[in-house]
Image (cartoon, rainbow, N blue to C red):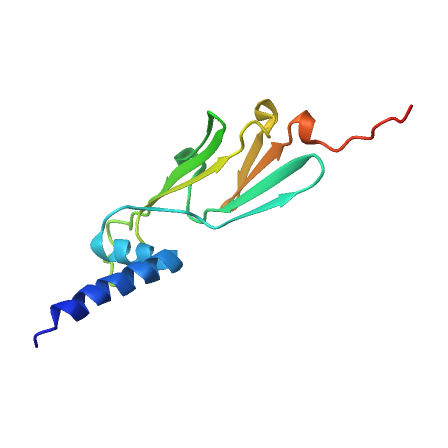
Length: 143
């Protein structure tokens, strides 16, 4: 069957659009081709008067495979998820692949970098980002 080249090109465009909307499409394709994709993991950010808290959901990631950096006003979280099946197993079907992941956030000095605190438990990375003193609410005395 011969496919019209114009239609084939539109098909590539549509797949590109789907991948930009649904990141899981990138992961599935990567798993099928045994390549390592760089993905953006799911995360939440909440705030209170004194800090922001970021929770990144990283199932299957080991603590030793995580790194957090702060450079030039950019907080970076990077790591890898790798799964190796035991030698006696034969993979029959696999929808997951080894993944490198990365998140970065520009904070432009709004965070007190010296007081950043991170914990990792049960596949959830929790990073507490204290607000810089200038951003914290304060009461102004009236004379």
